[in-house]
Image (cartoon, rainbow, N blue to C red; front, side, top):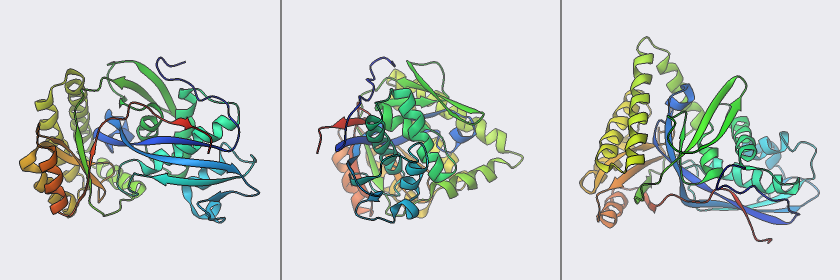
Length: 325
C-alpha cells in the first residue's frame, strides 16, 4: 500500500463517495508532452450517490449512457456488463472551469464502483480513474485524476522530490506521480464563466509545439515547472510567484489565454504576488497567490472584474467513501 493513503474498502450498494477538484500551478499542456507538472487537490469536491437500478441513470437521465462522455466511459470500461446503477451527483466545482470537475466525477464514481467489486488500492484507483477520463477526452495526462485520488500537492514527471506514489500508464506512455510537501499557503482561483474544451486546447498546443521552435518552448515549460516545484517544496513564495507570471506568459504565447483570463489577471495584480491561467485555458480559470493578508481584497477585485472567485486550500484527502446514503 502507498504510505499514508488507505485503500478503498469493499462495500455494498447503496453508497456514496467524494473526490476533490484540482488546481495546476505549473506545467499544464506541457505535461502531455513529457514535461513536469505541479498541481494540488482543492477543497472543492464532487459527491456521488450510487444505488442499484434496472439501467444506467445519471441525475435522472436514462439516456446519459449515450450522451454523457464520462458516464459512458465508466460503463464501457472497466464496468462493462456490471450491474447498472442510478447515480446522483452534487458538486461544488464549476463545470468547464479548468478546476477538475470531470476528474473529480471520474474519481468519485470509480471509487464507489470499485468498492462494490471488492475494493481497490490507490495506485489501481488512479489508473482506473485516468482510464475513464482518457476514454472520455481522448487526450490528456493523469495529473487531474491523480490529484483527485491522492489529495494534497503532487508532481507528475517531476524530479525525485518527496514520496513516489504510483505510475500511470497509457499504452507505451508512463507518468510518474510523486507527493510534494504542502507549503501551507492560501490560494485564490477565479472562473471567467467561459467554458473551456480540454481536448481542443490540448490538440491546439500539440500543433503549436510541432513547429520548429517547439522543443525550445517545451524546454522552457519544463524549466519553469522544475524550478517551481523546488520552490514550493522549499516554501519560497517569491520564486513561485515569479515563475507563475513567466508560466502565464508562455501559455499566452502558445495561444491558450483569453481576454477574460487577461482581465482577471490584471485585476488580481495589486493584491497578488503572482497569477496565471490554470488548466486548459481558452476560458476557464486563473489561480493567484495572494499577497499575505490580502486574500479578501483579491477576492473583491476578481469579483468586480466579473470573475467567480474561490479561496481554496489544498485538500489533504483524495477520493473516499462516505457514509451510506
